[in-house]
Image (cartoon, rainbow, N blue to C red; front, side):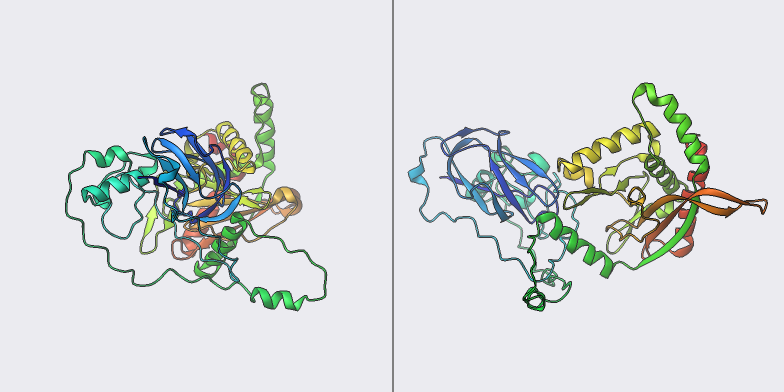
Length: 428
């Protein structure tokens, strides 16, 4: 019996994607691990691998189709001995993408990646190949009780062939409430268009990334209780120290930026104030042992926040090299989900664009984000009371009050300031 190839969930929060390109055609023979297609999520273009072997009998969703929902059939796979005539004429075609909503969709909840351990009947989505589902149905197996050995814990043919039939668990009770409705972010589309009737304009279609940014930041600003802490940081000692280090690293082709020092300073500060190295998890707070620091990278049409893991343990040169690599791949939308998800703290640096200071919106479930302005020459009062000139950088720490209270946030920002104004201490 022909089996359907379904639109995969390539990240925990993916609900739909664009089938950018087919790398196979009807009649091609494929085996497990072969690349079938390129799929664009809201953040990246990723390759989709076959998990079963067979012949591509029919492609249901043409290349370039946008808004293809997860688990919609995109192709039909034939097994040995089957032909295109075995494909039922009533095989469901891919659902047409829904019309753009008039309000920003609610952000998908941040979920953990599908685990390889057996899944309880709790309503959690079960990832399984079409062939594995068919075999399980024939044998009366409950997929929720099986562990998957495929990519991202997906249940494949081998997992169900040797399993023993057991009574299926009772279906999970219906959710207490339906998914949160899309949050209104302004007047309805028709109303706005009517307002500008008669004035020339061009409509710019929202891609997946912009839709996701709009939804997540609307949710963050409305649901996260932000408060803001501001400090000025003198950079003269750091600039002099950076110059000395870069002179010594020139032969290795390494050039440290001020941003590299900021990443290191924040990572160490999270260790110095460990209660602030945390994330909000709905009904609890998660406190982390390691400093995983996200850094906002502007790309065409949006931004990424790649995460530098274990940043407190890495040298400045290692952080610099890793950050350059992540930023380059972010601009080409080649980051894997695990490279831009996670972390407890983020940095957004607009100083390079000449911005003196600004307030950043927290990226849930992070507990804080540091907004970094430009270093500017300013008059300062020195410790001995005399007047002088120093290079001063203004920073603003946006804090989630559910996780970090005022005094704790002040301690964190003080630690960041101390690290940057005494940069040699970061190497101790």
